[in-house]
Image (cartoon, rainbow, N blue to C red; front, side):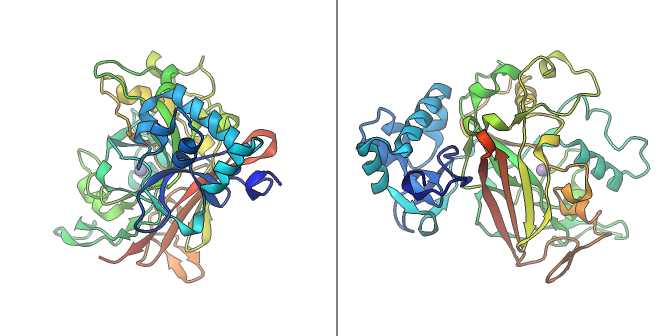
Length: 405
Ligand code: MN
C-alpha cells in the first residue's frame, strides 16, 4: 500500500493530483485542494507548514493565482506535491497527514474564476451526425468550412457551474415545423453535450497570436464539461448568429482540473488530416496534440454512451491557435470546450440528439424511455486516461440534475 492508504491502481493516486477548491465544512473558507484517492489535501496548509516558497500561490480561495503563475510554477508545485505525498520524509508525511480531509465530508466549489468561455465543434462524427439530422438533403453532411477551421462560438462565462449544481430547465421561444407562430415555455428538448474543457493559465497580449507550439505555455489543464443544450430554443434562435439562450443557461464543469502534466502518457496523434491546413493550423510536424480520454455518459446511473476523445479532428492546440489568430488575447481563467465528443459507433455519441436521432429512437432506461431529459434526471460524465505502466488517470466527474422551472 502506498502512503496515506491510497490503494494501488487508484485512478486518483499520486500520479494524478488534480486541483480543486473546497471547504472542509459548509461555512469554512475556500481553499485550494488536491485530490488523493478519496481524500482532499489542503495544499495551502501543507505548503505553509513546510515553508514552501509557493505557499502564497496555494493558500488561496481559487486556482487563479496558480493558473496565472505560468508553466515553471506549475511544474515546481507539482514536483513539490509529488514529493510531499510520497511521504518518504517524516516531516512531509506529518504535514500531509494533518491536512487530509475525506472527500465525502468537504464541499467542492467552482475551482477557478472563469474569464471568457468558448465552445468548439471539433468532432467530425458529431458534426456529420448533426448535419444528417438537420440538413438531410445537403450533399455533404459537413459545412464547407469545417475541415478548414475549428468552428466555435463565444458562450457565457458567468453561468459555468461546478459539478453537483442543479440545472433549472430553461424557458424560451420555440417554433416547431408545424407551429404557425413561436410559443414560449420550458424547453421540451433539453439535452447534454459530453465535452472536455481546457483551462488557460498564462495570459497573452492582445494583437499577438498564440502559435500551435505554445499550447503548453498557456494551457494548465483540462476537465470534463457538460454543455447543456435546449435543442428547441437553439433550433429557432440560431440563424444566423449561432447558439445563444439555448446554451447560456448553464454549463457544468468538474470540480477537479487535471493538469496536462498528469496526462503525458495519454497524448496521441489526432486523426489523419484529409484536407491541407493553413500554416497556423498545420500540426503535421508537431508533437502529438490529441488526448486519449475514455469518457462515459450515464443518465440516472445507466451508461448510455462511451465517447472516445482520441477521435476529435481538431486538437486543443489548434483551437487555441485559431481563437487567438486574429489577435484576441487570452486571460487567466479562460475556458474553452472541445465540442461534443462523438465517436464513429452508435454507442459513442455524446448527445441525446444523436443517441436518439432527434427523438426518433428513444433510449430505454430502467425508469422508461428518454428522447430528451426529464425533470429529476441526473446526467454524469466520467473519464479516465492511460497513465504510465498500465495505470489510469481519473478525471473528476461532472454531474448535474435537471429540476423543473
Ligand atoms: Mn457544445
